[in-house]
Length: 206
Image 1 (tube, rainbow, N blue to C red):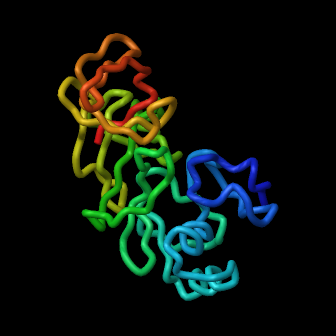
Image 2: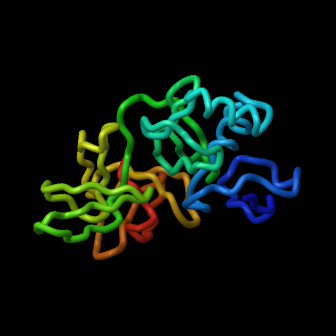
């Protein structure tokens, strides 16, 4: 399935003019990059969709340590993507997606967006990229976690005063700042030399 180029999210670093249709991500349409666009248009490792499909068949592409099976699979924000090297999907200050070289090849950043009580009184942590884990560690909604490739917690980053955050929604998309204060669902961040107050849902502790 394809999507009209003019209907794609402005976060995709592709020209607004060109072929009428582009690949449609299988999930998280406005918050991910389809594998084919990552490989062909961002990394310039392939010329055609057929080239990308061949790389998939040869098991050369992975997302979070798992082999890619479809050229439209979604690489979500902060996911690990393995091609010739290890990359992480991030945001530029321009608000565009960017594949940056991963400093750590075996962990990914996840924001806790919800917690659910499941059977046996276990707590399920639900993340921004659609994944989830069971955890007995006291973690709050809004916090970030670094998970290894088997989804075990490596590091906990509470959303609190003094923490560095990236803005992932709204007017300041892609910018980073430091938390000055938190109150209810609002967070005040210092970006460069100015302070702004936005919703906690718009940031990720990094």
